[in-house]
Image 1 (cartoon, rainbow, N blue to C red):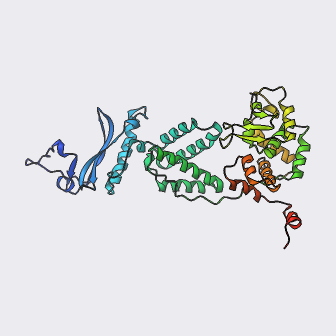
Image 2 (cartoon, one colour):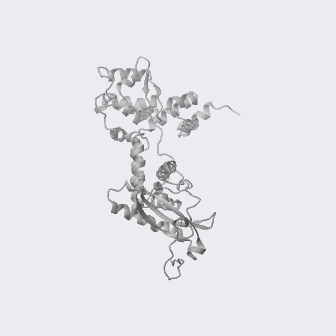
Length: 404
């Protein structure tokens, strides 16, 4: 790029008065040049990137500065900071050469921070709001996303991550074998992260917003019919009554396995016949009352006798204790029992809750009551469980349906 400066009579550069340097007529002062490249500046006020570009409203060159003091604090060494800012200058100059002008849009130092730094800030903020088990999925997305950015465009400023890069990121996940629900979960996580970025002024728009979700395959869970539940009861009632109590809580009281894992003896109210699912252990973060059947009341009475309210309901060996049982034991032990009884692999632990909802709806209990008992926020979620395959559907319709 050639620069044409006005010359004085002696052939040297004519020094321009300071008052004229902010708004310069492009064609008179700089020939055909419509910008002055970005450069790093450091003075008593701190660090900044400065450059001149055409103001479309006046047609004149106008100085533009982006303060970098906040960004500078992110780096322990000034050399690393300068290296990052130099890459930003190259990017800005490329945009200026293509005819871009900063005037009419807002740019700030937050948009110049590297993607990884912003993602770490996002995780730190969420850690103060969410439970550790919830944070696992947030941290998983952060790791996958920032590793991809480091491979494809290391130290990319967050404000430069646009829709094209978002599409490439999701395409790479799909090419790597991510399908259906897993793909859509990553897409939701990307949208959530950039919604936060927009809110916090790290980005101007959400690059994941217009990417379409993939069609999801139905969940591979089937109901646990009465005969299978009876076989499970017969197998566990003497071997491990605590494990049987867990399965009854999931089926009868519609308590989610993770919620049951967090319960303490103090949450159990036997005289009133319910378990209080407090908001700090509920999946939906809303407290609710989980009703107990008379059989469960008696089982829990025996199970909790002599144990303090602070003890976990399901400690080691599914008995109350000061320590949790490993949550992974819930799934592993269910798989072992299912295998021992030669039940289908599609009968998962969560199938007990699905089946409980399904059978409550078909027993004549109104959907609103089941919604409240199941802790759903929408009736459509509750009624969706009525779509599970019913092996007795033909018999029920042929014997009970009204005739023509």
